[in-house]
Amino acid sequence: MPERQPEFLVEENDGVTRAAALLKRGALVALPTETVYGLAADARNDAACAMIFEAKGRPRFNPLIVHLVSISQVSQIAELSPVARDLAQAFWPGALTLVLPLKPGHGLSPLVTAGMDSVAIRLPAHPTARAVLQAFGGPVAAPSANPSGRISPTTAAHVAEGLGDRVAAVLDAGPCAVGVESTILAPSEAGTRLLREGGLPREAIEPLTGPLIVDTTPGRIEAPGQLSRHYAPSVPVTLNSALDDASAVRVGFTKADGGDLYLSHSGDLVEAAAALFHVLHLADAMACAGQKSAIHVAPVPETGLGRAINDRLRRAAAP
Ligand code: TXA
Ligand code: MG
Image (cartoon, rainbow, N blue to C red; front, side, top):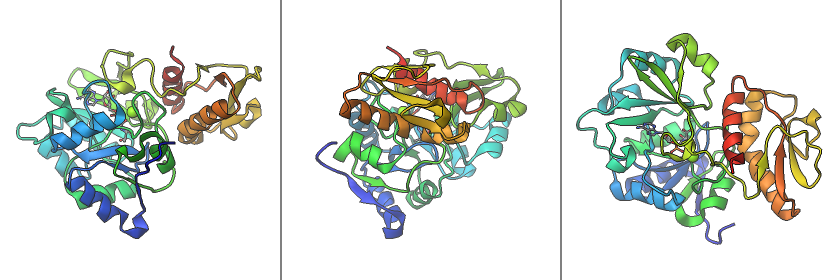
């Protein structure tokens, strides 16, 4: 754990006002969202956005997700095609990010868009995130609040452990309910591309869009969540394990799998997604403390949220 700690804020103690004030003055604040904790900065402030990359140790300037509270705010920054508007109305606020064409005069730092003519936008559902966005009044850039390549944070303690005082403050609203990052879609006239599996399952989207064009190839988009190795604990991870090797920390999908830890008591994928990063953090800590050389994970069904879980596990296990 880093020696220097960020300031801890809670909503009950004016945390929202303080978080918004810090953002206005160009500081970094970790905010709770329903997916994971985000490392937030004023998306119009170049220096603040540059600090995001520095704090995470991101190897290069990859585009960031812009967080807003209302669709009217979105339409000041980006073009909403009819399909995009349908998706926004169906799933915002929520665990969905849309990559949309930028409008002239959008005012965002070029670091947020990585100089591209599109922008990734999300309206989070978490009431605390929404309260901060409302109080701040502008666009907020936020990747997950973890050092680049490491396990994403689903509690305020994970953020402090990973970033220390490289973030000015952490607004603590307890564990994240969804637990995996948002699903990223790029709607276009030729069809809607799925850029990242996430908290909104494919099965919920396709009735609206028709079949998604899956474009989640590792490395194709040079951004951390798309890299083949990401979300990584400090010891090697093996998937689809029978959990029969006691030299590893064993993670079951259900309790009945008989691991040292499990993702869901009885095999509920929503519960498993919410627990995923916390269990990986724990398994990593157990491996270090008990000098185990690996983490073994039982198979997780490839349906619904299981796709996002398996995507994160495959990247955690990549060599
Ligand atoms: O749930 C989430 O999405 C969390 C919370 C904090 O909102 N945020 C998050 O952000 O996961 P981040 O920076 O880790 O992921 C941003 C991803 C990048 O990996 C990249 O693939 C995609 O968004 N992205 C951003 N802008 C894009 C663009 N213009 N075109 C294509 N992909 C883009
Ligand atoms: Mg991330």
